Image (cartoon, rainbow, N blue to C red; front, side):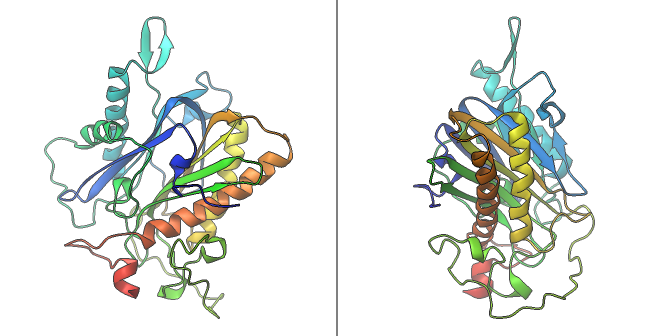
Amino acid sequence: MRTGPRNLITDVAGLYVGNVADPVLRSGVSVVVGDVPFTAAVHVMGGAPGTRETDLLAPDKLVQQVDALVLAGGSAFGLDACSGVMDGLAALGRGFAVGDARVPIVPGAILFDLLNGGDKAWGRNPYGGMGRAALAHAGAGFVIGSEGAGFGAATGYLKGGLGSASAVLGNGVTVGALVAVNALGSVTVADGPHFWAAPWELDGEFGGLGLPATFDGAAEPAPRKRMGEATTIAIIATDAALTQAQLQRMAVAAHDGMARAIVPSHTPMDGDLVFALSTGARELADPVADPFLLGHAAACVLARAIARGVYAAQAQAGDLQPTWRKAFG
């Protein structure tokens, strides 16, 4: 397993990411869109999720493909970002065909960033416009850290962020992840610089520090945020041709990566969620071994993306938490 050329989710050919953030609002939106619609599924393990259009991602539902996926800040207000993305896609003539009508299918998930010091006294919900702008900015290259849906994110101790990573497997399949890290738990060990995700790091992508020599496995962490203030939301992508059922299993496995990178994760106060998508460009060589490997790769890539998002976060005026770089140099 090696990283793709960008070490971003867009190493899965045909996918693009658009990010928009408002520094006054201290919030943002991220969108993943493809050259053509893609197959998608979802799995939720947190106790406080906020979602839109996720029910239709079940394998027994009519719509089998979607036009875009959205991650946004803003709590429930941020779900309106999906409407903005829909407007932009409709203007491009994209969407699920129903007679002469086309309806863009845009599932999304949100995180809570309403108490991060930004000006939330808007007169009109800004997230629809941010969603459309994020779609307009979609491209293969993008910056991680304090960007998009991760712009106003926080963790138990350090400032959160938008992370991404990729892996090319020995069979040629590519797997990528995009994640907005706003967790209740900590991404580093005992408030130190070492990332929990260190065993899966490739090429020193988040400092190459490894794990500390010792740590207290019996420690009992206390929540540092209040109920409803957390959530880590992610998208796992692959070019392997997978069904919705197979993608859902990959999303389930990817949650293992969240648990490797954030301690604790999947708490009653987090809305932890993973979308999984397939462009379908590469047929499976082995219908048993390949899905097995893809689940493992998804977990590894998501763990790395989480650490990279926090590692890359940039300090800004008014931050309520230190960035990793400010705390540890």
